[in-house]
Structure formats: structure tokens, C-alpha cells
Image 1: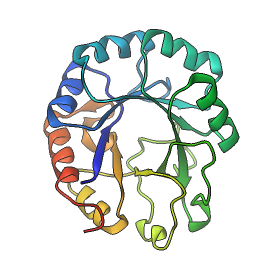
Image 2: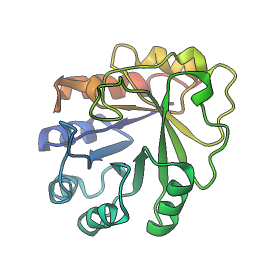
Image 3: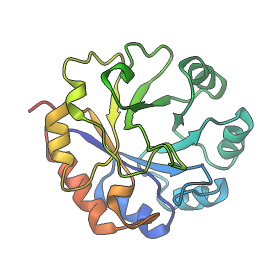
Length: 212
């Protein structure tokens, strides 16, 4: 069964819907340009609604140590999801904060697929954003899944970028993804999660056996 992460949760209704749907991870965005961004205090309040809920993933973009430190002081994240951080920096942050690290990789061609993942717990494969984008992810943009044919993943990985309840099953079947990550694909407007779409996405992802 493929696992599902719902990212960009920024309201009580959204986090309640994700937990009720059986999401395997819930994600908070700590990147102000995103319409899904939350403060450390806001994320802590939301996470407290479900003390025994799924693991909490914090999304950071090219963060300074102090930025991560401030969030962890308010909310004990389970995973650090790092965008626009090179492999060495990602591994250093893993050691510094003693948390699993997922390193996001922007994919446009087969040459972008990583062959190694030293010191990384998982990779998140996302589409390279358009040139005028203000954020590295959450752009409702997918990459060519056929690029993954023959790729030997050096670590566990998640598929992201342009996924929706309507296409996530096909994406899993096409790529044998171990897990999927969605944000804009379960929204009614930028930054506004839709409970019905969240339920549909998780159900579709869980309903497909990886590699079947």
C-alpha cells in the first residue's frame, strides 16, 4: 500500500480532515511566500489537536539553523523536509537536529534524478517549478513520470508534484512510488484545503498496491 502525506495544513478543519482520512504524515509549511505557510506557534496549536496523530513533517526552504531551531522549540517535528538544500547541508542538519531528513529534488530531466543519498532518510521528487514561481513546490505541476523508468532509487522516496485524487492511483501504478505527497491537489483555492478532496486522495493512494 502506498502511503500518503498531506502537506500545507494551516487550519483546524484541514488537519482534522487529514487525520480522519488516515493520512500517514501531516505537513506544515514554514516558508512565508507560500499561501500555506504557518508560524511555529500556529503549527503547534494545530498539531496539539491530535496528540497521537500521524508524524509531523516540517517543510523548510534553504533554512538557517536558527529557523529550524525556533520551530522545534515550539513543535517537536518528526521529520525535516528540506528544499533547495544540497546533500551535504541536508546531512549536516540531520546530525545537528537529530531528526530524519527528507531532501526534496526538483525534476525536469532524467539527469536530475539522484544516484546517491548520503546521510538522507528519504528523497522527495517534485517537479521543477516554472521560472517565475515564488516557491519550490505546491505549484500543481508534475514532471514526466516516465523519467523514473529504470531509475535505481538510492533511498526511500516520495512522489510529489501535480498529484490529485483523480491521478494519484495512476501515478503510483506508473512509478511504483512508495509514498505520495500532495498540497495544492486537495485545495479548493490556494492555501484552502478541501476535506472531501483530502479523503479522496488518501483513499485513492491507500487503495493501490505499489508495483501492482
